[in-house]
Image (cartoon, rainbow, N blue to C red; front, side, top):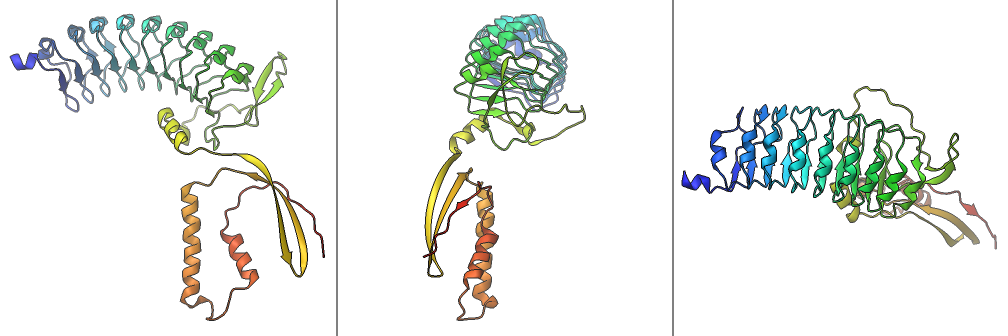
Length: 367
């Protein structure tokens, strides 16, 4: 028993516990506890006796209630309550002063306590897949917050205080009912990734122009480009300056079940991939001279360069050309006969990837 009391890490996940083992109270040095994938219905107050606990994973249970005495875990830094049946959180959760990660996604929360604002060290907060209709104004006190995910709720608006979360770099608000964003969002100048897809937005506040670090802005369910041009317009009613583009206004969506590529959006993973594959879009002019039929043809082309096709597209094109070459080398074309210019042109047109091009301006000089 003496050795058990000195235990610092304990994994009881993937079992059939319906309540916490009483022996846990005696493991006073316990720092990390996994109880995920069980059948717990209550997170009892006895958990508060673990004063040294730093990491607690209670995800994927059936927890409906978190006892007030959870505040006894005064050293807790990571609290995972994902995929349970919680309808509310106790105010005492605001007493977990050292909390840096709080995950309560995939529950049945209808409201968040104002005490959330007391978690001054919180860096990651995920409350996606709940039934929230508002965020508390105290969220503005989370000055240390880096990642905020509030996907798949029923938010019609954001509190103006959200602008005080000036250290947030990734914010995902996908699949809500947002019709507008507060001007104060322009104060979040460290934002790099912002997902606003599947909402009811008609425009963006002009203060978006202050978000100089913004690298990815998602505005629709299946957006192919992360960066899109924004232009200034005057709101038809208020006459205020707003930012808009070809994707606005979006049509209202019915509340039917909907599944799209954006459902798998992972802000952290997307940012890593973005760093590995930068896209380039620019315009340039190219002049080319060719000799044809004893004449001199001067071709002047205005081109617009689009992002390089994905590796899968390139692989398919290479395979197609290789198959063609393989067939010609095995007797498809008679031996000792060279392909004509028309044949080469046909092959080129057939297997060359068709990218949109700006209209060409061609002038011909005949010698």
